Image (tube, rainbow, N blue to C red; front, top):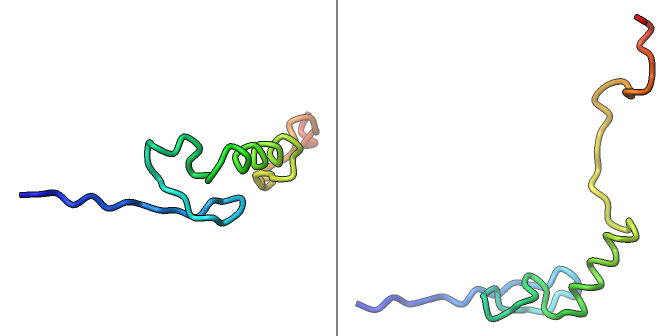
Length: 66
C-alpha cells in the first residue's frame, strides 16, 4: 500500500506568489526572505496592527466611586 503525499501550496501573504508549505521552504508562509522581511518591517513600523476594543474604563481613570 502506498501513501500518496499531497504537496501543499499556499499564496505568499506579501506578494501572492505560490510557494510550497513544507520543511523545504524555510520562509513559509512567505515565498522568500525578502517577502518575510517586508512583512516584519510592516509590523515593526506599526503599519499592521491588531485591533482592540475598549471593554471597560481605562485603568488610570477614576470611575467616580473613589
